[in-house]
Image: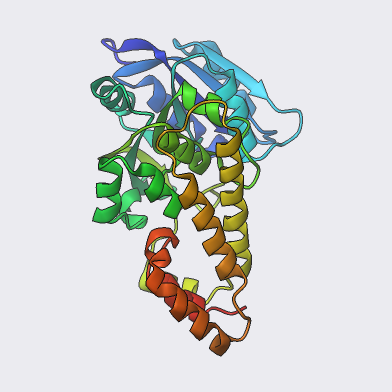
Length: 330
């Protein structure tokens, strides 16, 4: 803990663990090394059977920051584990944390500065340096691996984060800080959604979000991540073109239909949401899921659909998904 570190009581950390003993201590140490310390840390363990619990207990005893430890009686999975951890926090600004990363010393300070500069912000997320199990840089960053394009950045900066994220998720929870009201509006998390993508779209429905280009987290890739990143090499992109997409598109349509239901029943206003775009996105993904199994029979419906601009607006890879829909196996 830096001798001059301030404590900001607005900030709570929601940290989820599951058999993370190998890397957990390094993550916890980086929390206490922050230039601005959180007011509390909530750790929710999802039934670890390694040394995770002992590490957390020792940390809770020694930490100068108050620590609350939750233990799920039976494993809930990463999304519901995060839901429980966030629910237990008391701060107005919540930092999400994985168990195997390392925070840059000013991660909390930089995110707080963004919120203080723009009170209307609902969520801030940053870039991250991708590192291996040994903590050594893999030579790229999270935003680069996601291939975030200028049009997506421009859309978010122009206030259309909802439209950008409806097309595809760009938010990784391990880099995010959000307002408590975002969680309150979005809980309980619907089961088809991963916690970070759901919180991101809820945040974007309420107001602006901000992407910080600084890598404020070392995002560790070690082969046992509960959620990780795959480098978008040419070989990977080609392999994705040839993966069956029918079930993937059905799953996306189901998630988006759930978003439409949430908007219909929302307890609080979602002024940045576009319900008509949500309905159109769901219909588009159902169209893709229902394409003929025989490749040549897909040509006409895909080519008739393409000029409508839906691939550019709603498909995660834009025009490349036209090729995917024509080539992928049934």
